[in-house]
Image 1 (cartoon, rainbow, N blue to C red):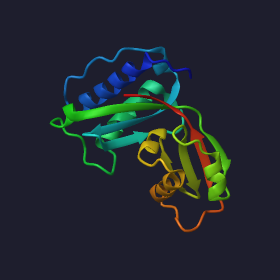
Image 2: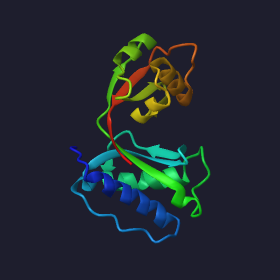
Image 3: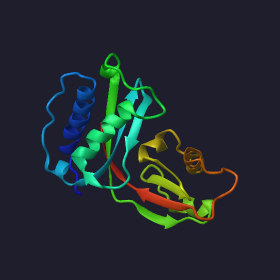
Image 4: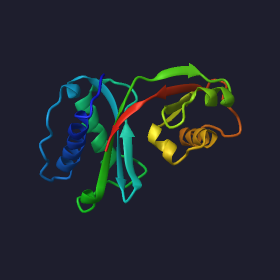
Length: 181
């Protein structure tokens, strides 16, 4: 899907309207855009005072982008297990970021060194997968974890994977995003 800058305000408005409506507030009417009706995968990230307040998304495009953004906005605000649900009192203080994911390409990654060689820091979103465990970091996480080894270590912790042993069945997924704030 080709994305242009005109999509950003539409996606942000759609996410804000979904959360406002769920809070029982008068939602603003989100404008339409052709891209909303095509398959798309997104993550919606909420921050408050620069701190993460919720982040939920989809790695695969299984529904139209508009529906995906609405569902992820509601999930980030009310169902991220790391945080209590957003309240109407704090809602005006919440900032929204919508990331639209490009396709994910998976490869096997038999060693950590092999994995590190394939990643482009600050450009790639990364998925690590072994057995039933899987986790991802959006490319924006490079801002907090700029050193590639540290980035991978934290991603392994997020997935519940061992730090002292590299799993022999490790798979690496790489993708890029177009983000809107």
